Length: 139
Image 1 (cartoon, rainbow, N blue to C red):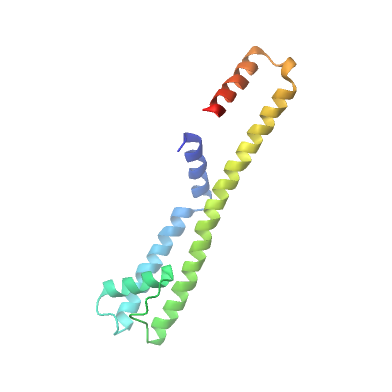
Image 2 (spheres, helix red, strand yellow):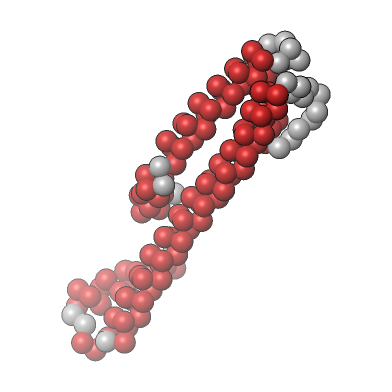
């Protein structure tokens, strides 16, 4: 990945608080698994409760084990809804990154076209810059 794109990605991740959002989601995920493990007799281990929560979040839902208590079902519903929101956040972060990347390219092309229109008026340095950009585009 080019340095410019890494920088743009870093800005998008920072602006959208992506890592903080993922951290909160993971905390909620592990707490929900623990509460479900403690409230449900169906899950013999914490690992089984984690697997159940993973099935909820990924919407795989094998159906081997299901929550039967009220608190377990409520937490299952909330975790499922929360994970749908997380998918939307991840998707919007990817879209934001690509929008910024495209906008940057459009701005660069517009500036390049503006310089081409004023070709006779450009200095040697500006002509060298245009020549270098053309070489970079071809490679």
